[in-house]
Length: 255
Ligand SMILES: [Zn+2]
Image (tube, rainbow, N blue to C red; front, side):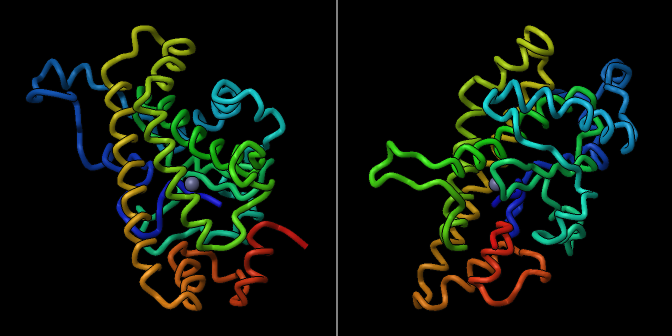
């Protein structure tokens, strides 16, 4: 269960600011030289096509055990079962979604229009989703051993999402993203890409904090009301059954 954008907060991996803000230089005033050296923005169509063409390779590089994971675009009809494709506010859109150990949906239309941000966006989005998938595989070494499968309740799903934001932030800050970039794109990593890693890591931290606050709030409710509240916070599609047990099954495509 995942989106890179929490329904509760301002987090998420989007690149909307490139549309509103020149951000020509990562530091210092905008000079005419800086303006000239600003990367030419891709059209939305070019950006999403580029992201689509690069995603498969990045997933493999991030985690070679993800060979059998299928990548589908946001236009796939299967997605509407789980999450509304048109969020109330455009910037509430998810960058990606997975609720299956073998499938990730990617919202390629949110791919950055700055070519020098493209690889970092894919690395971050796919790392986050691959962490979910890894979790779905279970962990017999945990105490008590964690069985294979999804979080069993929406409340546990909320907790899992919070942890995934935190894990992704740590991973991004830990240097692995830079290493991947330098191995497969360019060494040394350009400043723009390095800053983009930092920016997305900060967003993931914010996502984690947002969910932490939400969880805290949920826990103040009587225990019988928590599951409904967690469900509401995820902002799932209204196509999902209002019966929470059925909704859990629907969400994970279980019979
Ligand atoms: Zn997630």
